[in-house]
Image (cartoon, rainbow, N blue to C red; front, side, top):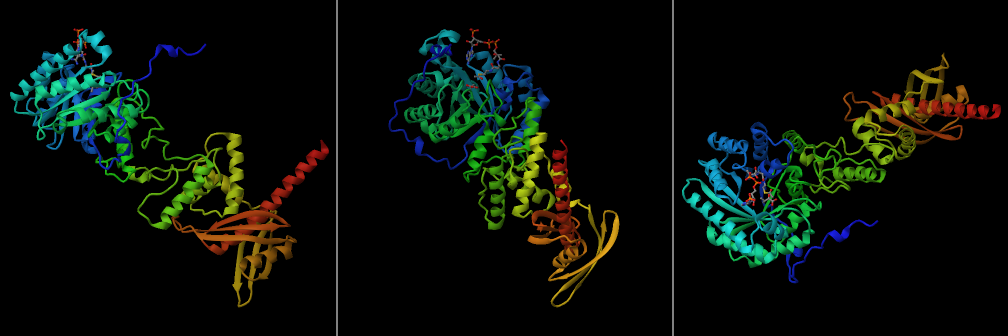
Length: 565
Ligand SMILES: CC(=O)SCCNC(=O)CCNC(=O)[C@H](O)C(C)(C)COP(=O)(O)OP(=O)(O)OC[C@H]1O[C@@H](n2cnc3c(N)ncnc32)[C@H](O)[C@@H]1OP(=O)(O)O
Ligand SMILES: CC(C)C(=O)C(=O)O
């Protein structure tokens, strides 16, 4: 059976062939208005009490939000009392304006003005739905009837504004603008503006909400551009957007609305709000930030902000939330890890201020996140990621061949065990594989003498529990030990690759040495870590030999098991 698609109607487009918004590039942050304490709050299972509202309000101030819708004071005692407490306790900074929402009903408007009495400045936000359906089913009024409702509400707002010492900024929202015929949305806003009488010096806010998002963002942008071109009070109005996220495109709707001429965005931190949420201000701000635009919000401690919001809303922020999600700066997959590792190295080498690392839209440090979680290892990971963690967490710069070798082992572990291998578990596996091999040969002590054309080594070695002193000479101490092993034990060792480095960032300033050696014609890696680079090198050689012996024993055991089966 097909889905019942015949129940739904396609959206209408706007006839605007000379639209200009597609070419606009956003170069400045809009006016941010947080509706967390109103639209966000009205969507919560357990709406905020005064203490939670206060905590949220303080966070918004700390982030630098300058317009804050603090509630719907005529709707509940909590909202009324909270608004009063902000005014009476002098908690509203001079550069911040609080907003309060009201329906176009006289008793609610009056109560709203009581709530803000004594504030220096406040936005009185009047709304009524203008949509075709709501005119019919909610108000049971025609266009003129709904316009009259809005104009009467505006007239009362104006009368009360004239009677208060508070500076009133008037805001009008044709709620459900999305589902309102464009010419009627214009008509009702014209009527409201004519009643209020805004001027270029004292502008009103005209807020065009996508109350329930049901069209794509380009249609919204067309509507905003059309509205801006036709609204006769354009120079006396701040155009504002208020997107909801029903189609999952609220951020795009806001951005395209700004491109189409809007100057202000109403939304919430991390996108809480009715149904699928209000538009997320953090994402829009950081989207601008990634384009080199000052977001005019301080999001440099995003995790702290997220924790407060989660606590106040009693809702989690999704781990994949843009910029703030727990996992958004983490790569598990091999090719991403490889590119991030190379990108981070190149970024550091270049010394450039301009961020340019693959798969990381921003430098996690800019929002207060560390590099620790950038790369995490599971069965999807590759050598680049493993090498990154070994270097960043354990200061071991594995040579490429060893990266390949070790990544194979890591893959076996993650395939067999599932889940993630932490940085510490990775080190345990590395140690067990390359460092802790003392059977059959254990290097107990050595003396080294260097002459002009040769080095000599005398080493005390425990072999299967028995101590022996072996001696050798060669061009360098490693070659001398190799020769000592050949003479004493008949083991043929040929060094293919040698790499060493100081573990500069480690507290006890150790050194690491990496050796790839053909041991009786088969290649094995061995690693040594020690305070002395020479000891680390010699241990790396012995580890490689021990690994070769262990591998041969395992192969022999397999053959015997096969033959006896
Ligand atoms: C899209 C948005 O987010 S808009 C904001 C919505 N937020 C909220 O509703 C949260 C707070 N609201 C409330 O607490 C309550 O709804 C109150 C206190 C405001 C009003 O409560 P009540 O009067 O008891 O009931 P209710 O909300 O059902 O009122 C609906 C009435 O208001 C009318 N109405 C609804 N919106 C408006 C409006 N914007 N302007 C004028 N009248 C309106 C309806 O037509 C209906 O009228 P009717 O009773 O003649 O049919
Ligand atoms: C009151 C208006 C702006 C609103 O919240 C909406 O339309 O979603």
